[in-house]
Length: 291
Length: 174
Image (cartoon, rainbow over all chains, first blue to last red; front, top):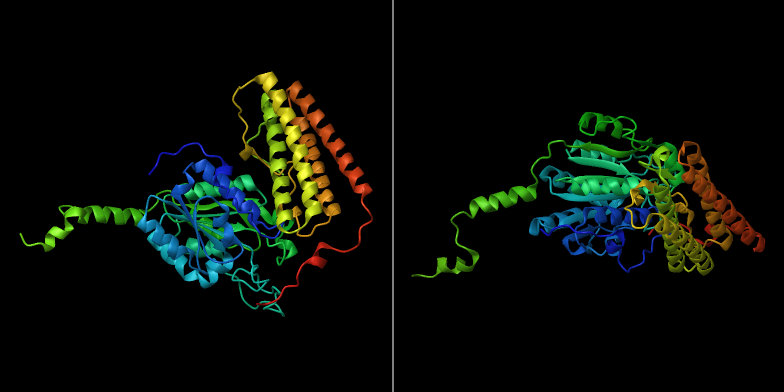
């Protein structure tokens, strides 16, 4: 791993211009990521940024890190493979609520239980925006969309409760209502040694409802630190997480005070243990050569 | 509009000047972002206006930075960008595809109003006389900027009555 040095937010910004709709919350999310990466100080070539498919999944292209805009719902398994193949990389995964909690929903549980050292950022806008406004897994019950003309009959997935229940060591929520706070939450998530989940309420200006735009979000937002929430208290975090969709709690819900070993760390240990007394790689063929 | 960790009671003139420079920088960068978004979405008039605003904010920031350098040289800054958000920069959701020059100017006007409100709200807490004078000067300038934008708005032809939404595709299932 290289030593960290001074980087500025602009060093992580690529020449590619975002093509999100003007006013989209994702513009501020990418700025928050630039700032967080600058604070961490790892050079861009030591960062891999993996995404699925959707508006928000364009995000790796707007950074100077290595990026892979993969297939729908598969950001996490690919990020996991990259982390295990090269544990020295700082690995970020990102996508939308549809990508993460519908088609890709089955993957999160396994990354959490393995505690892979990856930061997963979900830009949750409660709609499929790229395909023009269909119901998504976090859309509120009753929501009218092109695929729910009479209102959704389904309860939404609660991303915070979902990840907390599976035992994620770091769960936080941010929003474009406060970019500085969002950047510091992303930074904290990256620094957490293990799987870290950040849900970002990122409004869709084209297909989102009025109440989900910045003004609406400001009206229901509450900072967890001002509520006196103790982020080491997982049960209190789960209690607060139940208000997802009604209140917008911003900050760290849960940070495991005693982080569990990471899967990538355990693999390294096992490799070291099993390779004791083993021939070095360059002498492997000797095993097959009769002396 | 958010601040974090700024103790206005203890704010020195050096810190206040640094803060003012950061506020201008944030606004300049946001206008540049908006101009790029408008370019990308083929809204050239709004792009031109946002670029003009970015230049103004940059110029103001440079003037303040020069003042800071004259008074305090290279003394290290103790305020950072992480302490402020959206003071004079237009809100991220103020931009819209195909926004008219009028809408663009209204977004800028709202930002100048917001910046003025920030300095006025901070004023009662300020103890340092130099900072008080600086904040009075800056809040006065925000009012002047509002007048300039209002004057530009007045030159525009009457609104067509069409909304930005009239130019956006209807949602359609794929």
